[in-house]
Amino acid sequence: MTEVVHIKDRKEVIHEMKFSPDGSYLAVGSNDGLVDVYAVAQRYKKIGECNKSSSFITHLDWAVDSKYLQTNDGAGERLFYKMPSGKHLTNKDEIKGIHWFSWTCVVGPEVNGIWPKYTDLTDINSVDANFNSTALVTGDDFGLVKLFRFPSLKKGAKFRKYVGHSAHVTNVRWSNDFQWILSTGGADHSVFQWRLIPEGMANGIIETPPQEGNIDSCSEESDSDVSDVPELDSDIEQETQINYDRQVYKEDLPQLKQQNKEKQNSLPSLKREKAPEESLKLKFVHGYRGYDCRNNLFYTQTGEVVYHVAAVAVVYNRLQHSQRLYLGHDDDILSLAIHPVKDYVATGQFRKQGGNTL
Image (tube, rainbow, N blue to C red):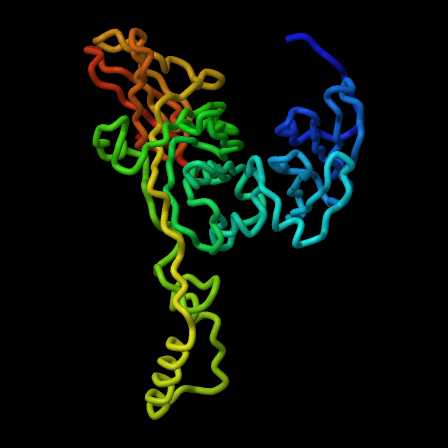
């Protein structure tokens, strides 16, 4: 690589940057709470500034026509700007007509459904939409990669979730052909390659059951598919919202039952969105736990290489450049031993509550 130009306009960390779809501009978001817009053809001369955020910039996306930009910030704001000037856009009709080239923002009605109950704004670190498959992938602080439908408008949307990372997932992105997903781990120092699998199929062949660790979960948080009240996932949660002014007596039961029946008939049943028909399969893991572990890489009987990274035990075939992955752990694998005959391997993981697990 050769440096084309060197620019330092901000004091704080640059958190996000994207070129416009037509290649004319570069938008740079920093922890100063500003987005600077540079003209590529003018040797990256600054020509605009977006300055309405009250906190650091976390995500940004361009419109298809390169005339608009949307941003998210640390305060949970979603703001819109006209490009390349950076003028703040507030006209709802104009905003409604914008078609986005990408979707990596974590805040907005289109991604309401990705947020579990009782989570913090920082719990979901990254999202990326696949407009072709109407699917959205997310990476969160719980080490999970999740697949949702897009848009995901209703809270408590169903999803498919996948494990393997042993720490927070810092970023997720679709490949250029939208057939692969890359996810990066924070403290586990790894990059995972996931293959998008059509429903029940893989290259025209019926797909085998998901490998261990690929938990195709349609629900993780909710105890009911139907809610009688918006944003309440079940009758159990709805019950906690009721305040009784006096003690309930036996003779009150018929009246209460009738009131409850009338209430259920008057309110529409709000069913959460289904999980996407597609699924993901972990195909390759890049990385090796060597910075704080020793004696954890061996050859097997057949000449394959066995080692570990994050929460994954890897058997690597050098001739085929392929991996077989064991995903039974739920935290960092810290140790690995091989049998003298080299046909069995034992792995041990870290356990947060003290001690290790084999």
